[in-house]
Length: 317
Image (tube, rainbow, N blue to C red; front, side, top):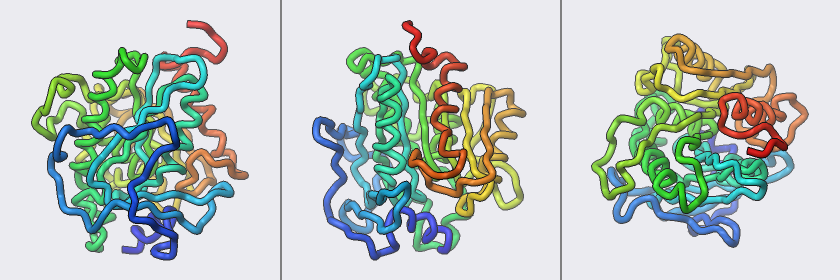
């Protein structure tokens, strides 16, 4: 229970935040697109209606907006504000599979990506997601497959590719980026993209769910208690090129989460680049701090250039 309280304390003040029983809405001019034409597969009852909560803790001088009890997953598409590179990134906010940090690890990220000519697809996936049951003290330790969330992630990847022409996206340049629990979801879809977790519902599900590149940022749930990799992320040579970022003083998920994933990728022959910093903690997103790790987006951009996903800045393609 302690780890859940620490993680969700980044979103709310554990009950002392201001809350409203309304669904999260993006800024004007952007619409949420339902992922499923009807009831999502593996639908479970939620503890209550979807609501948003504004945390009292400031990160980068700003509060954090958390979203909870998501039973109807959606994606919101943010078109590039700079010259369109044709690249798209699906963003998975973190929140311990209990909530979603929709600004800190969502809309803030889309502001960065779209300014670099990248289409940002912000996923509001289902939470709480079984088997990550907050009422069970074992929740942070039962590193199982987050089935509803992963179903939503697979469906989103397929939807993006099915709309590639309409949204001016190259279907071979669709990546994923996630934070904390969202970083684990990045690892899950990077290694379970061929695993059918739901029956096809329409023509969209003929599209591939494999990301072309992946960026888990301070990911969790990857290391078992014996130090081995979570068996629910079966790394192989087919795992997409991966950019990992981690702070050694992360006291929520810990540095071992990223290290064990890096080692598995390296041993499997999957392309991987990792940046490990001494200081940074957990759940900093893209908000500026005094730590060098705060400049990580520039490293991610440089990496996307090296793997051919975006052009060198200023170069016309």
